Length: 311
Image (cartoon, rainbow, N blue to C red; front, side, top):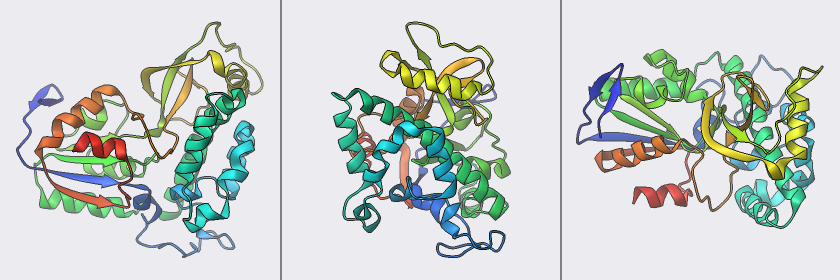
């Protein structure tokens, strides 16, 4: 299936490189500050306070993460479980624990609030972490080096970039390669060669919601907190639609004057679907038979849903 860039059809070749990014790609994204190093700009603070986290560190006791938990307290009830020492040691996975919590929520009303709050928490915590990390690294990341090598080695050949990360470090690097992303269509239809697929959602994506009675959007001293509070109280009434919206600002619960929900996939062991517009999934599926080379960076290949689609 051809795609278009600025109205011109792009014919795909029979050869294509696919690069798959996992959490490790962002965690170890700085060529200057390897894991374990403390940036001199942050004296007295461990590097991991701002480094993009691995999955097992998503609920770690970091200052930024604690601020996010304070903003979305409904998920604090499950944090002790997610900080089990066996998670950090690798004995059990955070995905397995969240899978259990998700199953419990089917018959436990508070569980729905907890899981909804987790999505808001992840959006805030990851966004704040990546902004601090970009400040520390000045945007000098291994993503830049990789994209340069891809551009140099595969000139004018389509390249498929698949990421399971919520952060936008890849998008930030793509700006240097003539791909500023300002809406969701830009991921696959703006650049002549790069096609980007974010399968677990993004910190700057939201989904419109439908609810029986409108949420009160009138101005208040803290409108975002007020809207979020209403959403938590009425979580059982909320239907999250498939209408995805690009939301470049760190808004909570509201974008373009409409109530919205974070387009962030909860990291569970057995995902039944992607957190991504369906048309992008269909486009990726169309590209898969053309993939002849795969480069994997920081991905553990535990995404059974993706592996099944790729088989």
